[in-house]
Length: 143
Image (cartoon, rainbow, N blue to C red; front, side, top):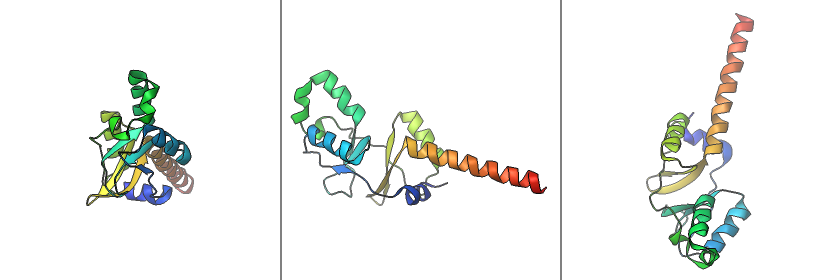
């Protein structure tokens, strides 16, 4: 399965936040959208960084509650692992595991098309395995 197929199933909506917004605003957006990460983007189409719940928790531990007024740029990850829509789900799973990331923006030609979480990857893989199982059962029963 390709990432483009996964995005068609789950939808291509991406929650974004501006780098100048406060960490408090980012937390509100995370809660509002029910997601674990936001793409940091000035225009909603480019990827300037990514900020996750994990980034905020680690920064809170280091810097305290005053961090909530700081800009997202102070806690975001600027070097973002991205993928293209034609990438395979298994390939993306390997990348996520190797780099220990849970969210990967999908980008083509510099434009943000969607975001894939590790949960999306696991669900897609389980769906593939269930389909393979069903085909094997059908083959055995009709063979």
